[in-house]
Length: 288
Image 1 (spheres, rainbow, N blue to C red):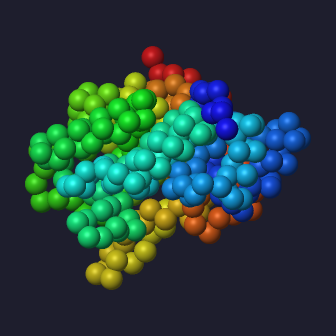
Image 2: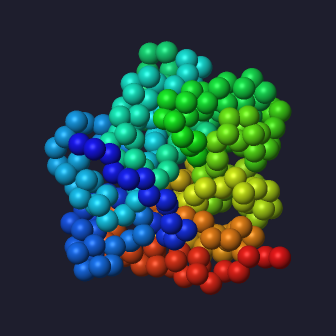
C-alpha cells in the first residue's frame, strides 16, 4: 500500500481517537462534518492488520493524524526501545502522520517494561542523554518530533535545570519541538505547591507544535492532603480552559487536542469539548 500524502495538522481542535468512536467519526465524515484532526497512540496499531487498521485507514482518508507515542522510553539508561522504534517507523511510513510525539519520561528497565511514564531528573547528564535519544529517533523517522512536558507528583531533591529550561535546551540541542500539555502543568503545579500561570508563561510558544488539555482527578493522598491525578477521565476543568485561553492570547492559534482516555464519554460529549476549544482558537487575539 502506498503511503498517503502528508497533510499538515490544522490549527484547530482535535480529539483522541478511541475504538468506541470509530463509527461515529466516519458517520460525521460522511455528513461532511468530521473533526479537524485526530490523535492516536501508535502502539495500538503495531499489529500488521485487522480491524484497527481498517478503521484507521478509513478515518485517515478524512483527516490528518498525529501519532502520540507512549512507548519509546527516551529517558531509559539503555536508550530507546529498538522494537518500539522499528514499529513506529513502519507505522509512520504507512500513514505519514502530520505529527509524531512522545514524553519527557522513561518506562523501560534492564529487565522490565513499566506501564507508566516515569520522571527523569533535570540534570546535565540526563539532558545530554535525552537529547541524544531524541536525535536517534528523529534520524530514523526523518522528521522532527515533539516532546511532552510530564505530570509530576514529586520533585527530585536536586536539579540543574528548571523543567521549562530543560525542555527549551532539549529543543536547542536536538531540534525537536514541544507538546505543551496544560493539564500536566496544572497537575504538577498542584502537587508541587506552585502557581501554574507563571510556569505556563515561561514556555516559548515558538517551540510549541501541539497543545493538550484534559481533565484530572484530585484525591486524598492518605496523609491528610490532596493529590492531583493525571487520569484523563473527565471533562476539561474551567481553570484549565482559562490557562489555555491565556496561552493562546500570547501564542496565537495552535493545534489543540482534547484528551479523554478513561471513562470515555459518548461521542457527542467529546465533540462538545472539541467545540469549546475551537471557540477559543477562533476568538483569542494574540497579545501585542
